[in-house]
Image 1 (cartoon, rainbow, N blue to C red):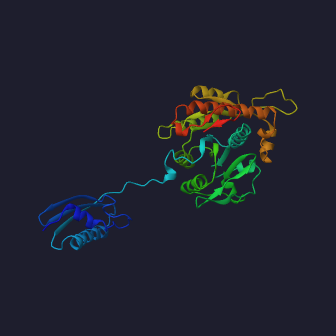
Image 2 (cartoon, helix red, strand yellow):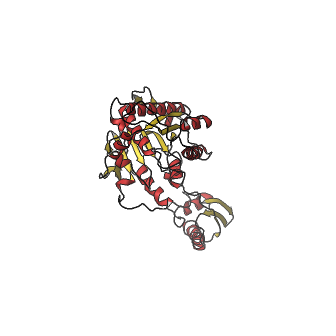
Image 3 (tube, one colour):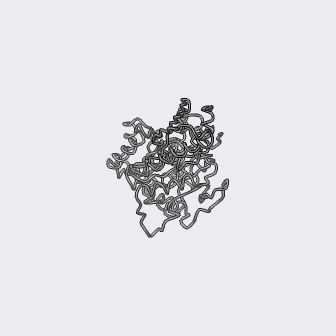
Length: 377
């Protein structure tokens, strides 16, 4: 009885593992074939653990050899179940790039109510005024506010076709592209979601959106450290994080935890620096007076203690709150002290980013040549 291993392999090319699309040969399921005269031993591995799948493979291997090689061959089949490597959702792979987005910066705070979204909105506008292409992802799933601060509360992202796929087109205002859950939720109803639901919604806004070309994507994170934060740092190749705090001790303690989260070994996102919001109060009628309501230089001292950069301070001024409430951030107002303060913080943030990018792989680097906004990619 003349036959070869090649004859056996050829006969098995038509057999597929239950639940798989490729043949046993294509999928490298055939681990060994041994021939002794008119006897053949075939070792097969499959990932389907059911007895039915195992039996089916055994029967089909014997049938294929008898049909395509020789019916008198004594066939023995050893089927071994090997667990398939867990397939990881590509949206959860740390470092997955979004095409054409050069730098992703997370804006975080340990404590709520410290003005993180205000800092995000005004930093985005400062970057846009410098000439950069900027987007903001409002990841504060339980309290989105970016759509309000940019005066686009009633807008809805359009659906566009990109390479045959339907994607969301971000809303744009003041030269900044925006996506927020505020576009999709009822403003009069609370968002009551478990962590996986929030993560899924964020993944859709990240990977099912047509962001186009961006120099910067700012991600406005919710307060604290939780599921959403982990989902973001696992899903995106974040170049750096900015932590916002007020000077008071309670806020600083939470900010320190926020920094520690990014510095954990399994997260390892560089902290570009700390911004101190509501540093002091200056009444409109006494523009030269400073009242340190929440304490003085708290964030600056924290930055020194944890060896990170102090990016700057923003005073507690009524016009900042009013501008945010009407959807016209103060950074839009040219040649004002507040516009200059946000510009300085933004420049310092970009400066720290350049230092960080010097140590990152070239594919993640955006080469910003001047602070006026010229960039090369």
